[in-house]
Length: 81
Image 1 (cartoon, rainbow, N blue to C red):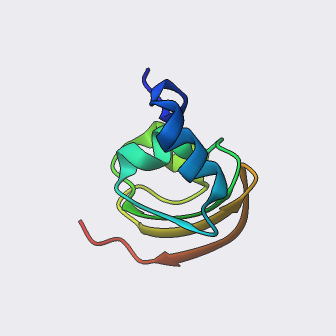
Image 2: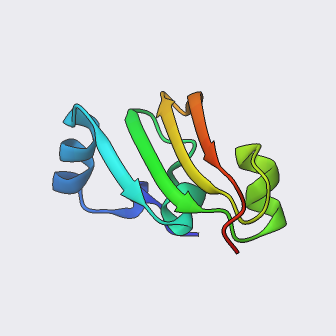
């Protein structure tokens, strides 16, 4: 699987120096949820594997704040299938 670590050094440097990274979409959560940094993820939980990883019900809208690869806050909204 490709991750931000597969990117060119210039991008990796900017990623590491960013005060906050906003990542929209389940794919970004899949590839960046263990990354170091201050990240905010916004996505719809579309599969059981990600639901388990995020700790949210399938179909939820997720807003997850990660610092250093660890979630520090979850906000959830009801099922919006």
